[in-house]
Amino acid sequence: MDQQRQNKEFIIRYLNDLSGHVKTEEMLRKYITDEELIGHIIFFDTAFPRYEMFADEMTAEGNRIVIRARMKGCHEGEFSGIKPTHRKVEFPFVVSYDIENGKIVHHWLIADQMALMEQLGLMNAQG
Image (cartoon, rainbow, N blue to C red; front, side, top):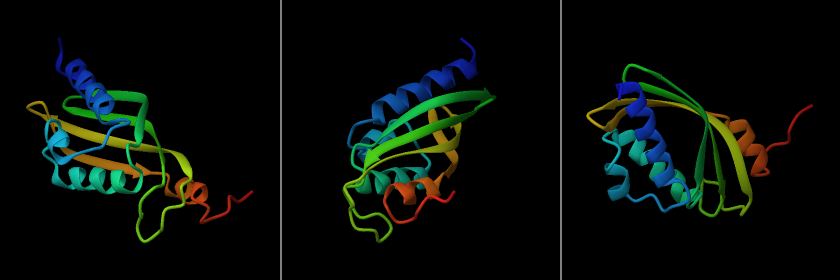
């Protein structure tokens, strides 16, 4: 099996294992060495416990996987100073993972924060 296919399957297993579950440091270290990513995931899981991720599109090039995806959860914990609203959210993001020796070693992420703020009731949708 070629490396790109193996990396895609690895990321699918990773997303499936994390989605809908409490994201513990022990669980994350099975897949990740990127400390910034581990911190980001734990931070988000505190605000949106057991959030889910859905990959809508995945592209592989060498040891890099790029995913266009959605995050779905419920705002049950403090998020950047915002008290829990108990609102359900679903917003898109794009993430790139660099994989070495069967672990995510680096990531780059961009999310639609405007959509998140609108769904939390903190901004009005324009137009």
